[in-house]
Image 1 (cartoon, one colour):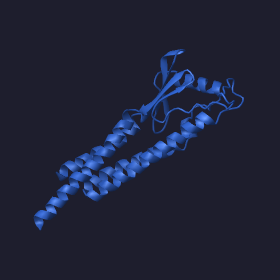
Image 2 (cartoon, rainbow, N blue to C red; image 1 turned 135 degrees about the vertical axis):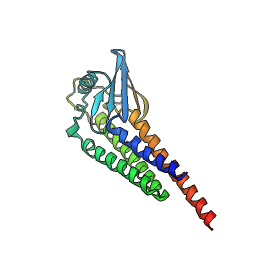
Image 3 (tube, rainbow, N blue to C red; image 1 turned 180 degrees about the vertical axis):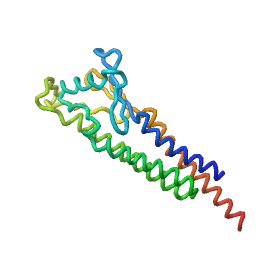
Image 4 (tube, helix red, strand yellow; image 1 turned 90 degrees about the vertical axis):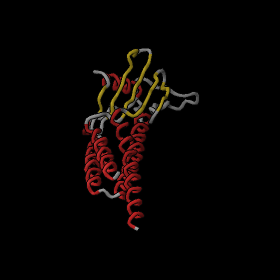
Amino acid sequence: MKVIARILMVLAGLFTASLFFLPMWRIDLTAPQYPDGLGMYIYIDHLEGVKPGDLKNIDILNHYVGMKPLPKPDEMWEFTVFPIVVGVMTILAIVFALIGRPLLYLIWFGLMSALGILGLYDFYLWLYDYGTNLDPSAPIKLVDDYGNPLQYVPPLIGYKQLLNFEVYSYPAVGGVLLGVGILLSLVAFWIAYKTQTKHKIQLA
């Protein structure tokens, strides 16, 4: 059983490392003028269109309502820091698996859970800034019934209607694998802890 816990911990690290190759988040926009929709993948170090030209079209839409252009890799500190964090946590997962102590598995689970929450919060702040910090000289200025400028904050997760656009935001393949990896580390802790406890009882 202890070997199984080690294997699960290694898998947790490998699933985390998948973020170097797979997108962690996806945002889709659909509207009558874009029957095929527009989509954006968010990687740990860059943005990528779901289809060729999607990022360009999203930037054009952003310009009309006063949103800033989508960031380039060198324009966001997250694109520099996130790969380092993912690399460190991947290595720690494998090292902890080799050591084989249940407490280390639990520590890794706690660190990854905290980092995941912080990452989601940072993502929300990024979305909020893009949807509220609008250029007052934008070609299109829309206001609500009280004359206040409308905001265009995409959902952190789930669905939201923005003007005539339907916006969907959800984890991509890398984000799903990351979540599974975090859960695997908790399972690894439980298996290793129960095995260790049972061994101590037998020795007594």
